[in-house]
Length: 276
Ligand code: SAH
Image (tube, rainbow, N blue to C red):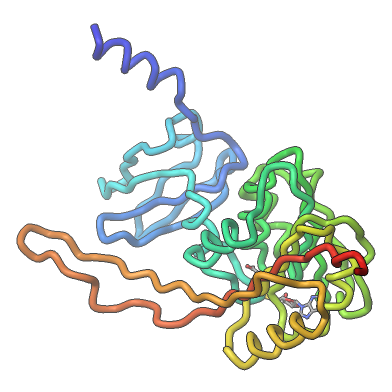
């Protein structure tokens, strides 16, 4: 009885593959092959293939067999799987940093968030998910080719470009048009040049966060934030993620890890104390 109920519920909650979905096929060694699901198309692999039509209507998480019997797991990629495999214009922010940025910048449902630059759109996807349908993401990007690449990546993952993503093809150092923003996330080389305009564009209580590859950049940004006088709670962190190998008696950290990606500096825009 209980089993039947669980089974029914599982069927109820099934997500079936449909045309336009991004698909990841994963083999036993964890190698991943990606494509967009298209009517009549074929996935070719070492002389074998799978017709897309065979996958359409199957549930997410299905094991599929290629024409000569090789079995692969077919899934709708998680956000972190997707960003690691999507085509890149600019270098992306890695999932371990996106995860922390979303909480350290306190991105919440309904927030108005400005980011720059959009790059390949990895962070943008994380921000869009965190602000939800009632929030807004505004992305400044100086390079048209990167902006187009990012928009394609975002549209494939979400099924379309969401109406609450506003992109601006411009150099953000020339000025920020928005006012009353809740959050700002910077991924560009000289964020200290934006401290003044960020102070004007952020609402009091708002948060500025910047991702930077070198600590000298973090230092320069920190000095600029102190000097501006409208920022408090200034801190810099980095994230180290270590995966483990767990197999029988062999239980230990993996031999290799990514030692460095970038530093995360954040600060809170404060309301100036009234005179006296
Ligand atoms: N966060 C992105 C990667 C951004 S890479 C991701 O996760 O995919 C940095 C981006 O900033 C590049 O696309 C670059 O073109 C853009 N950029 C650099 N200087 C800029 C400026 N002054 N104004 C707007 N965008 C800028």
